Length: 463
Image (cartoon, rainbow, N blue to C red; front, side, top):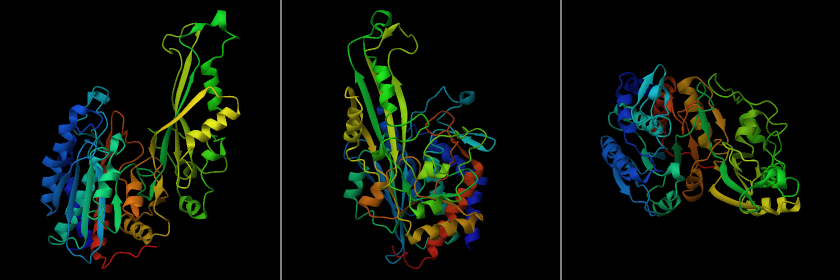
């Protein structure tokens, strides 16, 4: 059997309906990690579905309990040779709220439904479909090699990613020896586009910034008090405008990242952010001056207003509100100093006369990425190009946040992410779906990568 045979076998598993039957079974587990009533579903997904699937490929498995009492983890291992390369693969079995009743044509979020090129269902894109693609590709390679892979594989599947992976760092510290590997190869998030295979090296970090102006209890008649009572909503709007301007440009230097390196600029030089017809068009004259859309999205920081509240927008009263609040989010790349970001913002606002604005930073996600000098990057990109005939987009980091720092900082691994979804997949919303065209290409990409791992006599040296 050859590399081409392994890729063809992976494609057959999709075209025969086998992959979609498996995905439908996995989507049926209502693994909403934000819903305490679904704790049994989180465990059952690992014990009743994934453990038997791994056992059929001769993996040993064990369940790891959450130190914080959250959803469990599954550790699976396939070992052939102490001298062969070892790849660690990450995935998560939990999903966000199903949002039943909000899907198009009243689709059931807990069943897969194919409509043309789309397969709908909660978790199809995030992340059951993605780790199922990786498992299927492994099986295709193993069967093509007569029951061998030629390398060692470890999986860690968590069930708390959608609640921030609260104890994944602690679990990985405890399992540091068991999780030793040469490379983390994982799949989550979207590609650059449905048409272009993508490889990203890490993720941006994120911090929520809560701003609160609480001047008095209740509202006061705007005719009787307007002009003599400070308006917290007006104060809040102007305070935000001290941080980010009306075109989305950062005004506070400490919120900006370090200068873009030549490596980052070179990597993004051929990356075009081009939304499809059913995705929002890019806004003109928005974001940092002098940067391409790709540089703004993947190499720069942004401060977004997620929510604002003052008074009752549905039934506004003729009254000056007593309180106004906003939740902002700073998305930041590696190198940004954020340890005392709340103090920095507070001092900045106080210096501009907004001492009445309370500032609190919550829900932190770290920024991390593999160094561009890692030899694994070119090796992986060349494997993808060999399979697809396309040069993959190599992004310094994913635009969103993932627990990549657990693998770079705790396990000290180079990390490469090969996503199998696309920007318009509606993850975290009604109508979540995968594209059959992307799924077929992704199965081939992963089968090609795993075949190439089996050809490797020893791990690539780290830079």
